[in-house]
Image (spheres, helix red, strand yellow):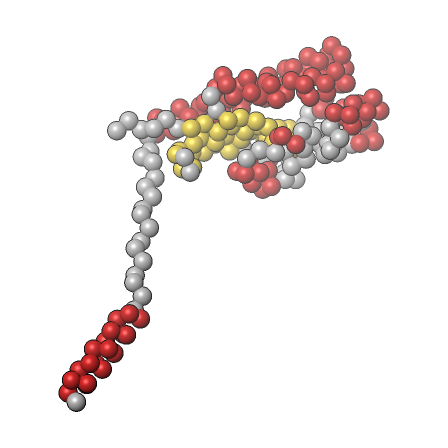
Length: 207
């Protein structure tokens, strides 16, 4: 009888032990990359220069075509050369760079998520009141410097980006041919057209 009681007690203890869940180990701590203020500053300079160079290069090319051949020639140049100019700046500065807007003409200019977030937050804000972006953050692949420069609508832009009823018929025709899904009209002078953006990797800190 005593033996039976002991066996039952042991069996009960065994069941109790098995029912206790094994605690899960905490996930390994992900350590942020060490911060090097000088490297952060250098990356911000690179990103800022790239965004500025892209904006200047595109504007000069479009204005040149406007002067030489009118708005139809400017649209053709923008359609044919803008992506190549962007790639040229990207290669020269070794950073990710581009343009983006909430009302796209070229669907390739949608921009990364962090740029889309800025565009959504500033939509409807006059360009003069839109605050750009200049920051360094820890990304999934290390620290990166990010820059956004607002693009303002100027008077020459209205020929191709203004109210649809005010756009000349020959311009409408070439826009329909080259950009069948165009959304980038209906702007007025001073509106926020979109953004120039750039993202540069921060050089790793020297151990």
